[in-house]
Image 1 (spheres, rainbow, N blue to C red):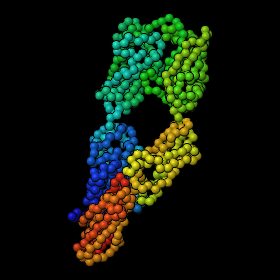
Image 2: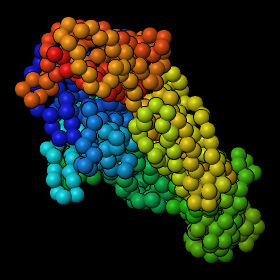
Image 3: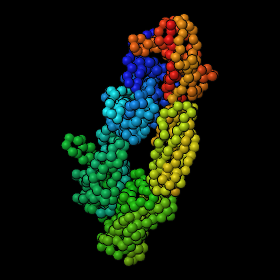
Image 4: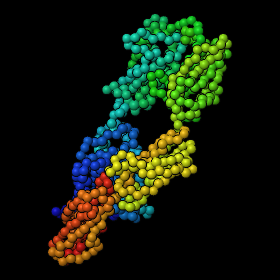
Length: 614
């Protein structure tokens, strides 16, 4: 079979037939062995290929799906076929291709442009922030010299993939997920005292057209108000909330705190509406009815602002150990009708960790854990707990001029270990068989020195994360480990946590082992026409016999190498393949072998055997 030639370009020489042939071979190997992720080749320019597709996309399966803003489990890698010119400096830029059906922003750890090292580049921590179908990435390779010479860019496009729902829909409705005072259909209307923050505070969810929570929504502002026409009797009442009556949603929820109505009335209802700018649609919901009552005097204390803004029915809030809380607790002294004792300036309220807490730690407040009330309210400041744990509950007790009164317990909060992060950097992303790689991991956080870092890997033979070593960080939080990968692998660094330092895992990195092939006879030789020559090629690394190796035969015609023929064989037990070839046509020829990339190794080539046939 004969193919038209391509004029060699500086730094990269490759025919379209050879590139497409490699892609077909790799695709066939995927179908035969069922392994993944596989470096399915895409050759938009004939020079550049995706050796690892984003999210492990395969031409033989449905497009894989990631989540908005979540780094993909399988990160893309790109290679330039047939080597690069060492006099040029190459960079690879990754972007969303214009052919994509989806729209969004692509971001990768360390940026979307990386250096090409040994003909390949691997990206880390890549993600797209917006849901969509049919995303395609473009890899563009630029080559330049310090003298300002720039090569024409080379490009390749990936297989398609999706960024799925999982909370990434478009808001079309809102809904009270926690009714004021815990009102419930079919139950008696709940009641609270006038001017007293409710025990159960309202929460509103942002939903898409299917009723799914839009967890990606962190911008919608929800406004609470007393519904027109309510209450049925009494009123009119004014709604106040210590956290404000307009709240910005967080992961699809708007949580309100410290809400109360100052005037008694029956069948109050609240409205929740999104604030509108310009033509933005206003979303609306109305709560179930509830009552606001008056009452006689009595005394007890109540958290009017929960520590960390905890809301009954909402997620348990958390803060780091030893860090003052963003929302500090406030406690009021109330009469039996639930009204604040606004004339009380003498009672003292004390905060402590209640014995019912599931964790032990120490409570500190810059204001002091005991405060004298002002107008019946004690507003604490700078409160924090030292000691990680879940289910902390605060007790507020009070001493009035008449003696102690009924205490109140806060909603639970969690205290987490101090933040930490782990950055991993291999010394190389592509190696030859037997070449070592040093993995450097840097732990950031208070007390990062002297911590044990565990190094884990996974490859085609070990599909689950397997520990292959560990190291202890130095005073700067740096730990290193040198390994010699047998096959292409993905590695990560893991810190299990210690004391106040939280556990963390680095972003994974892919290290490709490039296939290495020998050729015998090699070099340049001369034979007579009709001569039969047997060529032998061996493969490293070899996961077992049956690996695909191709013999490529090229003919020098009109000043350029033209593809002439190929033969495909599978390695025997000695990791070798053989080709017996009769040189029937005079001229200048060369023979070489290639092993297409698969889950075990990256694409590699043997040296060429130049043959002059006379």
